[in-house]
Length: 202
Length: 202
DNA sequence: TATTATGTAGACCGATTGTCATATTCTGGG
DNA sequence: CCCAGAATATGACAATCGGTCTACATAATA
Image (cartoon, rainbow over all chains, first blue to last red; front, side):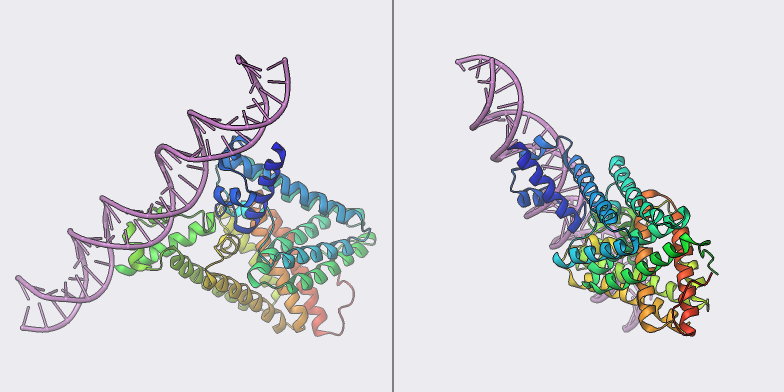
């Protein structure tokens, strides 16, 4: 039974942070959302709110990492995989009426600087996600350097789109960017097997 | 002077919100940062914190809009202009030791849902910025639809990069994505004036 | 029954927001 | 030069909320 209360707390907190950020989520919110009594929080998380948020963020990141990795592995063409990823983010936003975003962004923008563990978790989250994307591109023949740039482009645009879509309550930007980026990835894959990539700008 | 205190409050709040978000910024923080006493806040902003944040966000958005518009006008080649924009965001991040981000994102992720004015300001901010980018691309000969997709890509990646760079305390992702996106814009400009979006212009 | 592991309740205290009565500064008219 | 009154500034105050902690209750075990 212990774990039940504990996991309910973690899940409730994960949702609330994605909705309202670190400071926007109070213990009262967490308790009423998880139906747990006040004191239980300090039994399960002696470190208080910070410890709870750290565990929540760790779990959320692991979840995203797993799903991102799976999505990239089940499609051999990374352009298709990338397209799927944008679609699934769009679906997630719509299903939650645009009130939910990335679990990491609110922590980065909102969290107190005096919790180094939390910042490290966020840093490593982005590193992992970008790394997964880069690897997928490399596997498809894109040169390392270009693969990294594309991975950054995909990850950053997704992160940004989650913010923009939340403000505009509109899913269509996701689709437009998905097309553009998928085409670019496709092009990089084709160019990667052949000569050298177009890298010059201006 | 009255306006002096008022503007100092607005400027202090703008900074704090970009650093720590809506809920992470307390009235005490604002007061001590602006050197104003408590009561003055409610004299200048009878609506309290919400009114203050609304005015602050409006001002910040106007500022960004103005600078973005100027950056896009002073360069005829939008690829170059886009490159400059990424650079200037990177510079801003570095100069502030990666503790500052977009003024709108924290409000979107963090703000209370019961202030519709605030949400509307954020929605319209993204609309304006994307519109400015789209117009610049259209002026350079990119078809409307493609221009919109590219504008979304630029804006979303910038927004995302500000979050990622803050977590990683690293400016290099900005440069990598800037190269990639500028090349893509260049390509779209070349293709736009001509016939069809064909192969890569190496 | 005694002891320990697990879970709960609510008191505590500082922080936060918003209000108010009073002080000070500014302004123009006599 | 002074004064009336409008505009602005001030910090003490109340109400609420937030996070933390200690004392208590229950269940399992020996």
